[in-house]
Amino acid sequence: MEQDAKKKELVIEQFTRSRAEYVSSVSHATGDDLDLSVAWLQPDQHWKALDIATGGGHVAKKLSPLVRTVVAADLTRAMLETARAFIQPDCNNVEFIVSDAEDLPFLDRTFDLVTCRIAAHHFPNPQQFVWEAARVLKPGGCFLLIDNVVPDNEAIDRFVNRIELLRDESHVRCCSVSEWKRWMSQAGFAISNDRLRKKSFDYPTWVRRTTRSEQQVQDVTAYIQAGQEDLQAYIGLKTNNGEIQQITIDEWMVLAIRE
View 1: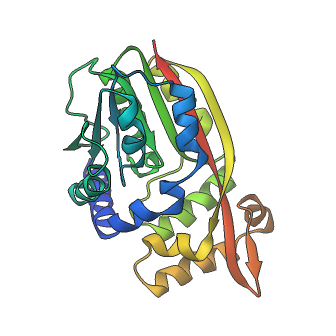
View 2: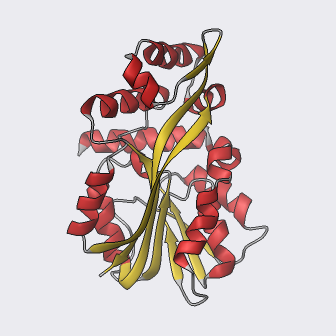
View 3: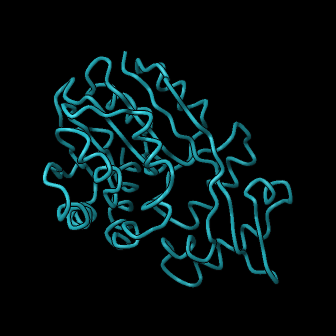
């Protein structure tokens, strides 16, 4: 429990410091997953939606004109304030609340839709998060999760997650698709649709969004460059004159229905 609390303190510190970057980040602000989410969900104007770990508020803003109410929740108050500034000029049906994804302050069966995009790798107890999503959803409600994942390969799992942790102290773990599927099944979800894709990043921009010093950038870079060839190949490592230009990670998008 103490370790979890410390990790959550790091999350608050990280997202307080980098809150503006998460609003403007290309991978968070754009991407076909935002449009695909709407296509999969077919939102109803009567729905009440919860966006967990809203970050810059991109999902909440996308859903706002399509549902009755969106609750944008985040552990970091400063991140919420930044999301509010981003959302509110255009939307008047979004509420903001400081909230822990693993201990949601809502009654059972409150929401028609729960979303969480590119955030769950910061949660110390992802299975508890899934249970909480199930608890606050109405029967037949939708759970849309998008996050970075790793394959069921111990070496790749260890390599990818070590890179992420070196880059961002608030990182906990990118889980595997099989783990997520197991937790969802145990919580009473049935998967309706899913997609696994490769997602590429401009390395200099990506590594500097969360690092705090040039030494930290060098540590991340050195670890990647020292990796075995098969591990480097898995992350789609691209270099130019010895400088890392691009890496690629796996992202899983899933729509599950609360039974």
